[in-house]
Length: 318
Length: 276
Image 1 (cartoon, chains in turn red, blue):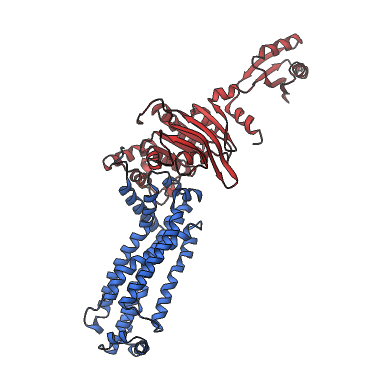
Image 2 (cartoon, rainbow over the protein chains, first blue to last red):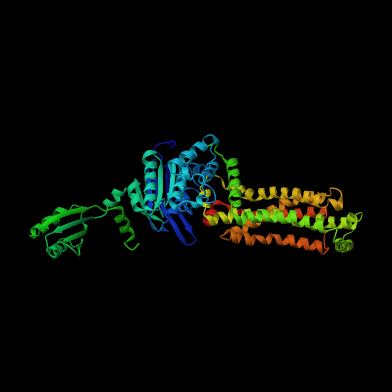
């Protein structure tokens, strides 16, 4: 279980954090607060500034401007103290493939300076927990991608960090391995009460495990909130099925009454998809269609998803 | 697990050195030269020279004549010996002395290439820089993981060379003639400096290349001065007196200090992460 300190103090607090590489601005005035036990996802395309943000918060990359506090300490001035309480899963697993799984874990246990007494037991515990006991003394070079990712996660967790930084934890994994990692993350947040900041392209993962998501674009956070809050900011979608052969009339009626909405008729069947409707418009649409003497068989309001939020920011083409 | 202390530097240093050496030796590209070069230089060559020297004493005698004109001190050192013994002493004590330096140079250079360029190539550096080890300890550990094994291997090679030379030349010499004072200075003063030069060169080279092979090949230039020393001795331009060896050590330590000072920048965490 993680150690507790002042309960209300944010674990991560960044203000105006900026990093430039020459002319390129990788992170641009980032303001971010992450509370204890919170799971926050940083979403964004490649180059949006997610990994650079994590590197600055871990104190391995100095910012060009701005400040950050992690556990109330400066990650740049107190790097070793901050990193001793961090667990990091880099985007590339960064495991030593010429060593066995057990040797990899022991190496990092030694780097974190933990007492010998519990090291063997803890390593065995982590290997069991991540289903790697049978492969413990095999060289990592022969592992599948999923096994490597699980071992890297075990390495990040073995010293019981208070804060986890996970960079693309499900990247390149098959659905089964991805589900295993997702389950582990749920356990970390719900079961262990650990603070987690994860960078991901996996919108399903973010929706499934995160308390809040921050969408980054060109180094800045352009949207932040719970998945439900972000989705709620988008206009809803309505799917309406009308009587046989009535689709075209229904389309014209809705377009005339709601000129700002995007209305499409399905190529097969008489089903309308209506986007960008003002909130609470569904009864008005039904009244309109019934008033036009059209048969309404089905009305299905569809809530926006995190994917809709993401594409509304990045556009369908990215 | 609970931290042993807020400053886990001792264990972390040992862990990095142990891991780097284990990983390096598990690669054939490292382990083969690691074994073959010392074996050839420290066992094969002295054996060959000790066994062949008496048969080629006349030829070696010509070398002694050459040195006589240039170095009265060396002549004085071998003048009381018979021609066979002169050939053995000139070959095993003087001619092969510079070659002894190849071992620490090569070992440090190869280990450093694997530790820096190799780790960059394998993508394992990122997890290391996220660990709580301080920049200073990280730099120290990475340097020790190449320098320390090189010095240990150098010491082992020194013992092996002395035993091989004494045993193989026993029929000719009839006494223990190695190590000489010059060789002891070589061991204590010059050999660690040669290892540091190999390390410093590899640190600089590794910061500018992406793969172990590139670093290994470019780092190989460090043996060129050794070849120059060999040629210098064979042509009679110089010989390895104790004083020359002391001076050589000083030059190597200064060169190592300059190389490591220049290379240390590339070992800072922010530099390491920028090159990933």
